[in-house]
Image (cartoon, rainbow, N blue to C red):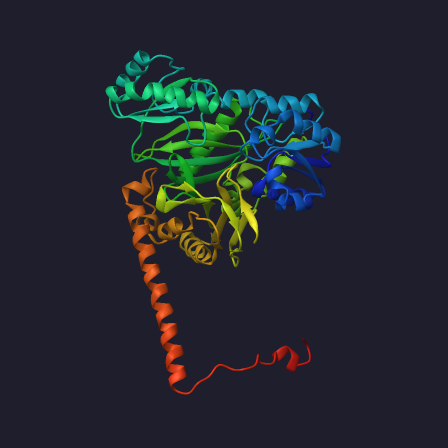
Length: 502
């Protein structure tokens, strides 16, 4: 991998809000930004904001944003020094950094070797055990037949999870509460893994109940310096995919933060990690932490960390990629306040998160103190069915959790997206929900506290409120007419014109 080279231009091998995020960092650093776009994204905002933009192929990801050969070809023709993969698409493809390196370009992310280890959950688990990083009880290697899976599960104790060794984003995971169910799920899990990742390799892991999902942001440079940038609570999920993230976690005190943060840095060192990544842990009700994986990319929720640390992670990624040392020590970092992120997905929470796509004739983006929105939306845009459902990331920062929560609740009220269904109603309910406010979180939070029932009740109340407001408006107009009132016949004169200024 090319090192110690000043980066003057970056091709962004992605789309949507993450492409815009990288473009903004490039602008601040005086680096030329080069965008790519598919047929579906001709009118996308990232195409307009980049210094240069090139057509990469048809709408289908395999022919555009996953087409390594075409992307590298464009990067070479455009004279790019480096490629930033964003997240998703090619961000965790171990062949992509090698291809960039062979063509004289810097890959802004980890090395191919680190990706190869972190992308293989069994290999990564073995490395972590050697480094004395606590892992979840289960199989020590890939299991290819159901008899071995049943033997491991019986020793670990039910319930267990069948997981693809190459999975991610909640895909390739099956729950088994008994040996009978494990035998039923094994073939289905294998087929699902093969369809999603091209490999049917499974492993068995003890299913820890009533757990929290807590991750630590990592950065590590080519000089061997590793830092953790504190934790993010990611326990509110559906189908093993995160919906809400926050920092700090309600259950992590400073002593725990220091201890698990040190373990996270040790995990990065064990795989010789480079650049930004995330060490993911499960926390059981007794307070024990278990390492589950390293996500070898910038995370969707990275702005949460940016808000509580004051750091720009994309600019830090670029600095590390061009051979610079991390410009701060661990003891220099301090957490400031609380940040919450809601993923605004184009999905209908009232109908089991069914995808929702189409034109967005209008939208209103919230703003105000402590509010940040990363999005590609604009009035007249289209949400495509070809790509991820994430349309925006809504963040709120406050001096403490209560202030951040209230700001988030108000921002959700202001955020309107016409033409499609989104997860906004779900988040409105959660922000007011007593268990969320108390910090009683777990990966089964939505089911445990019947949040969807509460969301439906909230929706009915809001509908009643709107109906009452409409009736009140009609009655007021009626009373006004009865009393001889009338609407003005002509448009009133502008006060600006009266003052001679408009």
